[in-house]
Length: 353
Image (cartoon, rainbow, N blue to C red):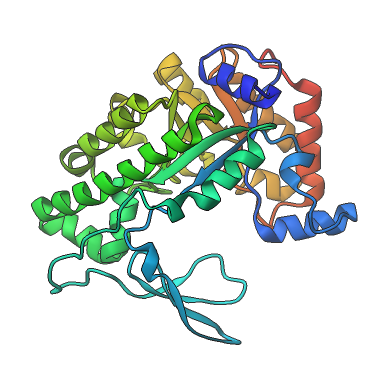
């Protein structure tokens, strides 16, 4: 077991590892600027440079992977059909695609059968990443969750209208998607075996001001589905299940914890997810991954503010249960600012500040 995996497992068990584990992801624009700043070649990886301790590997969880194709392309981008049955426009340099159509628009008939979750082709990239990374980082599998992935079939606006206007139909559709996602997750865990620390469920259900759905809707539609996923993953050998959602999920968090989740990420301070309050509220019931301010403090480059922010986050891990990081590192974060954060992480290291 690598030192990174040992410290990640210890932190999630609420033990004190040799140093605080770190997790951040890096936008391509930041990586390009970092390589120029350091005069490094295109193979250099900031995750190695900055001692990132974990990585997340995903199989192809789409319902129809065989239908994915590029239909046309030119200087303004490419028109593609993806494995969710969507037609999308990919523009050069854009982080997200524009959805032109979805698999299940309003007034459409029944949804076609999903392709088997056991198709070997779903797991080629996943297995390659696990093999590549497990010797020097903690590796987790990944699937989407009931809210976010069902939106892929209906479109975001229509999906929210479904939840408000036809809850029974929405629940049935989410259950079908969740069954498929869970099967992909269980197979991922089987294929990854002892090289995996667990699995993440990505289900962005929060905006900065609050959740995308009411607590009542979450309880009636999503909580049991999430609990079923967590139970299946733990039965398949996942030691830790992490729930990822951007934004403010505080009104839903009791139900997420009750569903059996072990940790949440990214704990965004700009959305009111205050890490010290969460530690006081949940104690050892919930580990916390993230907590640093990548919206205002890191982009500012202000060393005093960066140091104070790191001290604030580390204070939430005095009894363990913390992996420090932010949501992600984009091009608005100066390389010098992230270098300084890394310097402090190396100097301070332990939870006992």
